Length: 469
Image (cartoon, rainbow, N blue to C red; front, side):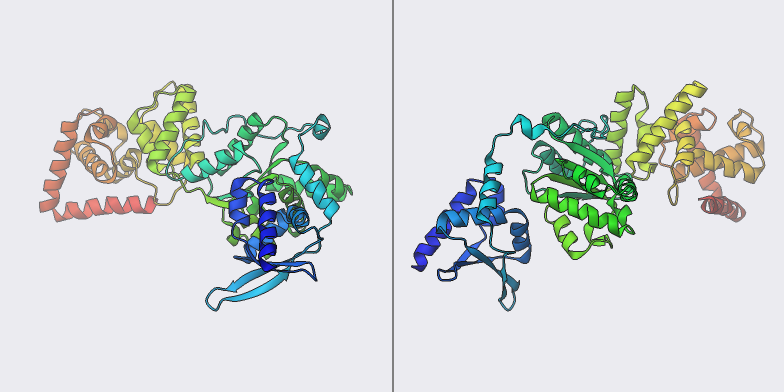
């Protein structure tokens, strides 16, 4: 008899397999192990590998399982899970399902899952998805720091709500491209499925809408609206740290959409475990899909992003300038775009080329970083102050002793503290060639070997750099 019950369970699994995707079946149903069936009590006991699997099954598939059990066992089966709570000591705990499944509801659920959509199903009015049409996968440049999140995001956009990547939680520091990525998912999903209701909303705007709805006594309308969304994208959820009622309402909406298989995408500057306002049940829900980290872009990715933006905007910038910006823009896509926009503005207003000197000036004013790398302008300013001369004196052809000394010291320090080639240093300091720079550096090095007072003088100038950084 026990074997026949096992066969009935296997038939139940076959029915379930016909009504879910193969990845979902392999993930959630194949690990279930039949334990026993109590015919007198009409109770089925199955073993699942963790409480996480139990919660997911209860949240997503309880109606489908109830229908399949009824079809196989021809009874209103009570379902009990045996959870492994301690692997070391092989301890388990039996947990009953939330209750006996209403067979009529279960049948309707399966019918809805297999029903072909009709015109009536699309009766909900269209809405503005609030997406930025420029933030797409085409403009999201791939690199080592974002390869996995980008691939996951594209898969979600192509199959919203139909993969194990729900919810999709992406996190990373400011400026790493989170908003671009989640926006690109929305744009792609809307492009492929025009009938779907896609909405991007910031956590701040969601909170403002919630408070406004509460003041106007329209909370039900607010909730009902969000429960119609097919792909819900919420940015900067870390801002809900002190918004307990907003979080509770969002979780109610989240749970409803989640159970219906709607796609939920969340972005934050930190992982779910570091969100202090998340309660355990919420954390479980947020973590049951996929969590992806976006790291700050490395120098090579910054270079690729800059070159891509230059091509789109029709800018011509030398490779050495692009490399310099990539190395000094703090690994932030937002800073990269800000620097390029500023360079373009300076170039137009002053009718000048976008060269290294202009890039240094813009970086110094636009990007805040600790231990900012020294620029030629920084070095010239400090050296000129020390020797009481002007940059024009240094750039001139004059052989006056103070001017020559300031010029040679500037070239030596530029060669020591910047990554510029000698040819570029010479161009920026009076239009000299690389041989002049090499000669100046050699002269300073020889003097440092024999002149202790000059060593102290140069140390004083270098200490001035540290005070300014």
